[in-house]
Length: 103
Image (tube, rainbow, N blue to C red):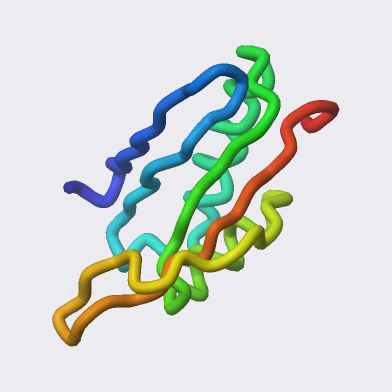
């Protein structure tokens, strides 16, 4: 993936959006690009009538957790041993954002 590219995977079920992945090169982190990508995606969801966005993120990914919280996501819980790692498994932080009246 080139530094200008990013990947977003998502799926919609009813009025709930599941954000599966926003992926960027580590060298491009902390440049504000993630904020812009996420804001644009959330605006598109609001414009499409989606009321809620859900996601999960590895608990150890503090940069991503901070990005999502800054965008209005709240912690909903933890899914134990969700992600495989080289040393076993890691918990996932479950987060959500109400999109009604957002933007």
